[in-house]
Each structure stands twice: as C-alpha cells, then as structure tokens.
Image (tube, rainbow, N blue to C red; front, side):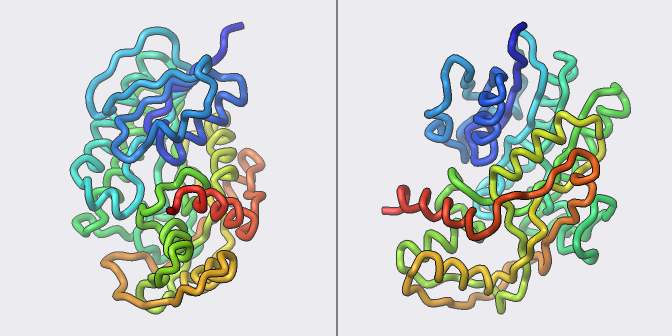
Length: 312
C-alpha cells in the first residue's frame, strides 16, 4: 500500500516544518512547498529526504504537480506583525491568490484541504473567550488588516469551494503558539521577550501590559491540526491553549526562567493591538478529543533551550 501524500504550503516555516515532521513520523510522504520569504530550509534539514520533497515556489503563482496528493495543508503566509508589516502586499496575495491556487490543486487531486486561519480574524474581540460563532471586531483598513482580512477572505473562499464543489475542507483558527523554530526576532511576544532576556536587554511591554494572551506549545497545536484534518468537520475550529496571562505577567515569567537582569520598559501600545486573546476550545474537545498537554513552564523551558542555540 503506497504512502499517503501531504502537500504543505509554507512547509519550511515555523508551523509548516513541524507539520512536515509530524506527517513523516506518521508514515506519510510530504511535499514541502515554500518560497522562503520567512521560512528556512534549515527548519526541515533534519527530516528524512526519502519521505520529503522540497519545492521552492510561491503559491500565489500557478503550480501543476504530477502524481497523487491526498492532503493539502495551506500554511503559507507571513504570520508575525513584523513580517506582514514588511510584506503587506505579499501577505494579502498569499491569503487570496495563494488560497485560490491551493484550493485549485486540492480540487484537481480530489484531496482533503485545511487552511491555517488565525485568532486575528476575531480582531479586538468583544466576546471573551472567543467562540467560533463570534464574527469578530476587525478594522478592515488598519495596519494589521492585510493579515486579518487575508485570513477572513481565505475562510470565505474555502467555504465557497466546500459548498460549490462539495470539497472536504477544514479551517483551523490558530491562537498564539510558540516553540522551537520560531524566528528569533519576529516581533511576537514569546521570541521577543526570550531574545531580549538572553541578550540582557530591556523587556519591551506595550501599554501597561494588562492585555492578555494565551500561549499554546507547538506540539499541542500540531496534534490538534492533525486531528481536525482527519475529522469529518468542515466549519472553523479554534486550536489554542485557554490558560491566560497578562503580558506583564508573562514578561516576569521570562525574566525568572532565564535568570536575566533585564528590566521591564513600557512603550505605547500599537494600533489595533487586541486587549484580550483567549480561545474557547470546547468544540475541539467534543469533536476529536483534543486539549493541550504541555504547560507553560515546560514549553517555555524547551523554547529557551532552543533560543540559546540561536542567540549569539
């Protein structure tokens, strides 16, 4: 019996590389597609080349692939505020043209599809914790809109393909995730704080640090994505860790765990920075028995260990 084949766009990125690893570990063959805008071949260098094929390609451009494909996982996109501010048009295009092309491949191959959506589609939420039925509070022309609206469009296009072509599609709404292979200076809270702490620099907290985030370790998230893909559910599902901390609390945790002498400094809060971010994961638990297993201390310990090998 031949191995099932998964095409993973953005496969050399943070989440994409962990997905490549998981699929190979479970007996699949993987086609890793990435234009290396924010990903790196270093992230997949350790994987078995007999089970992994790397193709450097921008998914916003058409692509024809020979042979069978069973699963298409669309994870290509800049995902940090620093990256999508630096590449606003490319971010919008990968969430529109890229999603269109990925869905086209899926339809041609009669495959199963999952797209990486985000908690950002909820914007600055007025519902807490965020449930999948909440429509969000998003500024469609703000400085984060190229990412937020690209993901909202991706969801709409995915559901249009599902309803029109009767395709088996999934949507995972990913909440704050951290772990090995994150970019060191990508502007998100976890790498920012750990990098600053390891370098002995001031820890930058925006506003008063009262805004909240919930952090999910990458292995938990990847398992949730896999279970959703293998389920028969077609509407969006939140995957994240509902354990919530304020940004100030989190900064103090990083200072304690790294043993740094860094001080906390306060800067003006960015435009449209959400005040609360916490998933309701009831649906994931009921549908496919998923819940996070790795607590914050364990996950951050592993992540600090990884970052120590990267920070010079």
